[in-house]
Length: 435
Ligand SMILES: *Cc1c(COP(=O)(O)O)cnc(C)c1O
Image 1 (cartoon, helix red, strand yellow):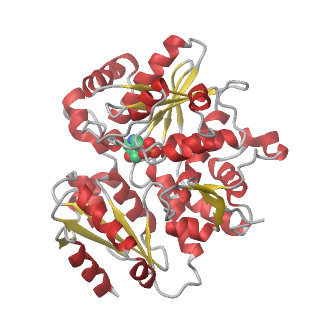
Image 2 (image 1 turned 120 degrees about the vertical axis):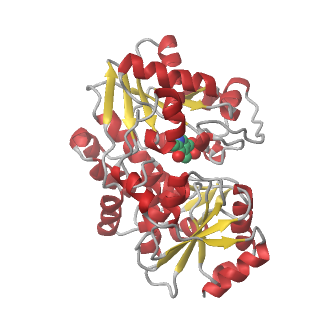
């Protein structure tokens, strides 16, 4: 049977995989969830610790997508997308780091974006015309999406980024691929970019005419591949050890993917959410009241989120019961000064270089281990330190972080971007003229 997807706001109504993935967001503003998330079958658990990351990914994806994608096809999509490692580094007994930054753009978002690109390519293989993917970015997401869709047949990507508000290397990641990737340098803020993207989806007819879709982080197809690496980490721990996963969080997609892994049968001791000063969810876990608010800027900027978009999925998973969520998920938050101090101290104590997001996670792991000395903590390191060179050099000194070849070589490539006014009419006109 194919999988069906419901909106968290209309649990009785279902759409198929293609609609859930290409529409991304249901019209009632809920989020899509799979109808069935069953534990993996007995034969999986017989030898799961011997499987590779893509082999585990294939079994997981099969459980979620069911017959919505033919097995051979799904296997190919998983193997082509999860084609870089997620090493587990043990710093001390019981203290582990799961490195998720070995993909082409050096952040965990590569897992989700690469899978989504290939799945979208397959879902639209018989459609007429190109699929046009719109993405507004404040930095990391655009690079991962651009790299993932580059040269995927039948697709093209339009990236909107705020002029002068992304780092030089980030801008190079957005503007040097060429081919089916087009970048618009918007004379405005990230919010302007997001507004322009949204405005096109409100014009339903045009969106359909132009075959538009969106690659934002609430897309269910970005979430599923992020559950693969929870299994990958767990299988490498000593037999019988249940991990406590510590997850630096912003929109809580990564944490929600962990909850999916648990629903698929993975034994997890606890989930610990680590945030910067944008602590809406740690506060919710403590007090039981969800109060979104405008985000504040921090040095762990990929977590500067004031209204975490995956909260609706977390609530859905826990049956809208605060107590149930609180029993499985703990939350801690740290400010920039504590984060900077942690980057320096951890380097001295262990020799390991954590970037700001991972450092927030490490602080939460330390706090958790104080309360639970028996815990085996696995901190998800979500990006490579070279992506946050300014902060790293302020704390550890110049040259403390080697820039990987695939980031460094971008510096010499020429930026190609089209200037765009922050104006909905102008943007829509431009889109139409693309044909
Ligand atoms: C996107 C991102 C996060 C936050 O992940 P969510 O799934 O939104 O919680 C954390 N760290 C880095 C480096 C990111 O790019």
